[in-house]
Length: 137
Image 1: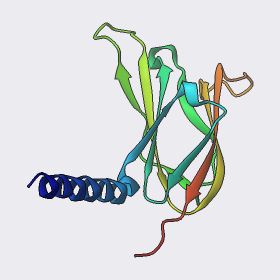
Image 2: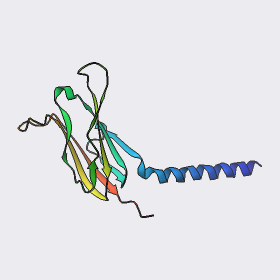
Image 3: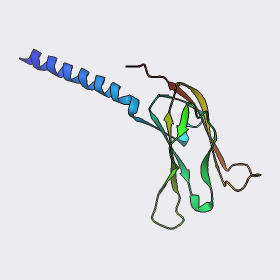
Image 4: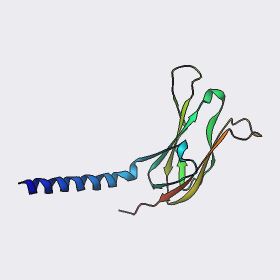
């Protein structure tokens, strides 16, 4: 009886891990400022979520400066998540990018004021993105 229970538990564990592996293609991949300068690997269809410190009340926000949009595409406008209910409080800006096709691209984001064209960005965030093409089912 113990052998049958152990065998069933093993089958259940394997089934769950196969299911989880199959679901990973639609999962979000989250990165932050600590990942700057690194290489991030994702699969087609996955969404890359980047969370970076920001305070839009200063006029500064994150903008895409470099990206191969045939590989990775910004999804909607960045969202701001305030760290407080106080007026003028800082927080984090969240940007979402969908992996469209296999390939590589450098993703460069700048933290700047869009109307200041002759001023260097306050911050620059760079990552190398490698998108693996999922096999056809």
